Every structure is written in structure tokens, then in C-alpha cells.
Length: 479
Image (cartoon, rainbow, N blue to C red):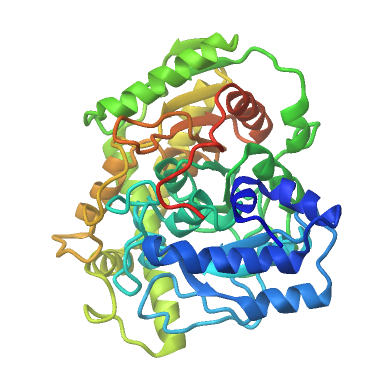
């Protein structure tokens, strides 16, 4: 029998350890997670599908002996897919689409020992910094049901925060791991570009801006998971460099003083909420107290051409995804089947030329070169995760009438002004839950590292977690 309080308080490695010691079975953990969904999901609307039969098949076949053997898991309904499980991207056009095979990443999640018990919410096509699709209704923060979970992996982050599972699949093309991690008070690492497999359906996912991974309760869960899934899949176009130690070993290596730059100034030029500034200043002070050299500095980013280039990448990819899905399902594209902001971006994406895309890639290449020079002088950059605390439900309305696609893009990227540049450069970046405001909402901060150097970030995150533990914090809605 599983004690639900213990279940909701353990991280994934702790649960796997209990299975290995035969204190609890994989079947009992799956049942506990399914019961947890029943208990809290009606309030937070984070989980879309309960998959008891999928879990039962995995257990009956014999759970692989990976580091997470027997641990219940949730998968986000976009990009990654599991054989026979509907993956609908929050979109009417996707109907009840299910793929006959696993993606490579899904296969690796299985080999890690996870038992998939359900799927999680995403905004329509993953193109929002909140998770409020018209088709399925908004996911809600377990810290305050009137506030956003962030997006686009908001369902996964809310489920982890509420104690349904200790770790869940997520992906990030402009902040979609880190934004919901910040809004839900969990840990979110965006790995280096192509660190995790995107095949066989994709090569450079979203023009190389997107990478798949997870959100978790603990730093060590994310480190252990990245160790087990990070290797190029067959035919991958490239793979980033790896250091001389595993990511788990990076948590155990003796600490060295880092040179950390920090800035709370938004590259968009817009003001940053005092709560978010306070969170950065507090994190900078904590890093200094831990012995790191902390300096106020930031790379220069020419915001307007950068934003235009980024939106070209997003809109063209969105147009392709919508067209491919509509052709497969037979559902037509239009205002009855597509949210209005998505429709505007679809139209814009279809209008772009090859020359437009090459010009956009040229801008992002320049950003990558500038950032690489900056990180020649600093190990890590600390910034706010977002320009404002978690937003109330309804503020980022993807179905509101749009003048044009640029209007929608600006709404998202002015709010999430600190995230997408690290998708452009491919650098690893993480959201660390170190601060809560007076209203009780989590205010994450972002740390970014050099290309290929997740190890330094994991080492720092482990140090911060030990200095200021967050797993003991409990939202109002919790298993």
C-alpha cells in the first residue's frame, strides 16, 4: 500500500529505490499516480488522458531496469508520441491523432524504466507562454487556481507541482520547459540543442530552436534522466559536445567558484516587475554567499530584428505542422477549427519565402556569435525567468482577434523576454525555484550556461537546492 503523502513528497530516484528494495511495486505506484490524477486533476486540469491500460501493459511486459524503474510518468501531447496514444497538440485539427510507433525519445523514456500513466496539456500547437487551449480548457496553477501554469509544458509542470508524478516530459522551443517550471515552482532544465533525440520525425526540431526533455521535483532526477537519454539517435544531423563527467557526477564534484553575470534588465526594453527583479537580486546574493564571483552584466541583444527573426522560425514551422496535420486528419483550417492567433501565425508562415527564412537564420547566427563571446568571460548568466509573476488565466488569450501574427508574437515574447535567446543560441538554460512572492506565487530565476555545458548548471543547481531546498514547499492543491 502506498502512502500518498510519501508518494507526493519523493522524487523519482527515491521512488525507484523503493521499488528496487521491494518496499512498493511498480503496479502500486502506477495506481497511486492514477488515483492522484483523480483527486487533483479536476481542479488543475493538467492531465488529459489517464492511461491505465498503457501502464498495465508496460508492467506486464517487465519494466526495464533503468534508473527510474517503476516510476510513474506523464507525456506532453505535442512532438513526442507513444505508439497508439493520442497526441493532439491542444488543437481541434489534430482530431484524435495517434501514431503507430514511439519516437526515439519515448523509447528511451521506456528504457529508463518509466511507466506512462497519462498525457498532459499544452496550448494549441505549443505556441503560448500559458496553457489554455480552447479545446480542453485552461490548466491551472496548483498554487492559485486563478493563475496560469505557464506554457507550453504547463500541464506537466502543474502535475509535478501537485504531486501527481515526480517528473514529466516537456519540451522547449522558446521557453516551454523553463516558463512553466518557473510558474509552478519546479525545476526545469532546457538542455543544449540536440542533446536529446528528436527523431525519427524531426532533425533540427523547429529550425534547431526546440529540444525535448522534462520538468522535475529535484535536480538529481533531471541530471539522472539526461544521463540516460542523451545520445544521438540514428541519422541525427549533429550532437553537442559532452564533458568528462556525467551530469549526475556533476552534482557530486567538489564545488568551484564560478564567474556569474546577472541582469534584471529586459532585452525588450520594457520594465520588469519588482517581484522578478527581487528574485534575481536574491539569487545573486545567494550565489555570492556560496562563494561565486557575481558581476552585473549581460550580452547585448538587438531586440527588434531578433524578435522578427524568431517569429519567422516559429510561424513557418507552425504553418507546416498545421498543414501536415490537416492533410492527415481531413479537418480544414479555419476560425472554427483553429484559434485566432494560431490562424494569424499560420497565414504569416505560409507567406514567408526561402529568402525570408535565410535572413532570419542569419540574424540568429549573429546572436549566437555575440552570446558566445559574452560567455567567453562568464561561466553562467543569471536573469529573471519572466518579466512578470505568473499571469492570471485569460491574459494571454490565443483565441482573441489578432491584427496580425506579430501582435501575438510580441505579447508572448515581451512576457517571456529572457528565454528564447537560448533557444536561438542552443545553449543550456534552467529555471530554478528559489523565490516566492508575497502572494504565494513561485517566481523562478533563469541560469544559462555555455553551449554543451549542462554539467556546470547542474552543479550550481544542486548547490542552490542544498542551500535553499524547495521540495518541501506545498501548493494549495496537492495530492
